[in-house]
Length: 290
Ligand SMILES: Nc1nc(=O)c2c([nH]1)NC[C@@H]1CN(c3ccc(C(=O)N[C@@H](CCC(=O)O)C(=O)O)cc3)C=[N+]21
Ligand SMILES: [Mg+2]
Image (cartoon, rainbow, N blue to C red; front, side):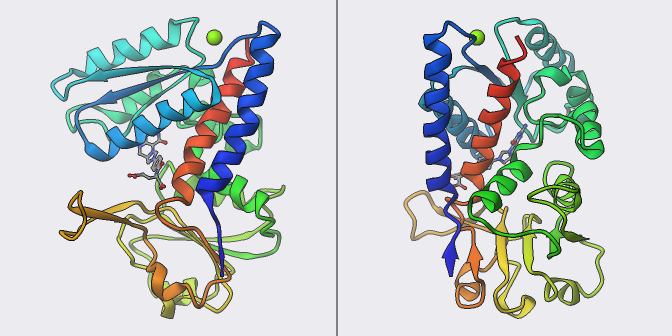
């Protein structure tokens, strides 16, 4: 089985980006500047945002972290978004999800200027993506496309099964893999919590994308020999034998799939680092607007 090493690929791509940023600096161009808004104290969110900021430093971007407590009000969040929309020094920004329960995520998303929406979550970018127009593509699906492309995994004419229908992974993944283009041109089936006879669908998959958030749900009996597995899940499972008290695992039972899959992304070190790289690529693109 081939390990689809997202961490190594992310390092390679970040090296390429660093060279491009060096060129921009030498020619006196605009250095990309990403801002991240982090609200509350969700440990997973803190770790993701930290890795985004660290990655900015690695490639030579400017970055700004805006941190606020859970007690923040809806209008205060909207005010931060408005400031970032209007700050000429900020090329792109993200508001880390999930937000505290009393904040309306849709209202916050709708307030983001699509030109700075490097997550690709706003209606303008989702619409443009769906129509095949230039847009900021959502980071996780785009990271997966980049990985399939760089590893030379053919998608044209393949049976792809996507598990999950979220706005940030399942839905855009389905759209992007079924569109004309490369990677693309796949026959895509989207499955979710109401799907009947899940195994019927998953056993037909040449490529299986798991984005459901249930630890190790996909097992060997659910797939055919030679399947390519993309595991989007990042679950923290209690484990007293670990120093941190938990271990990370995906939505796929990696051990039982190892002898059946032809290629698979590990967790950690698979899709996660590629997500961060896609965000950087979108920020670089946003910075060229000026
Ligand atoms: N506005 C917004 N945009 C996002 O793109 C967004 C978000 N909110 N909320 C949460 C999800 C999740 N996400 C990840 C990013 C990096 C890793 C990552 O780097 N993972 C490492 C390890 C992570 C760890 O050690 O916990 C890995 O898989 O190897 C994971 C998950 C971005 N998301
Ligand atoms: Mg700049």
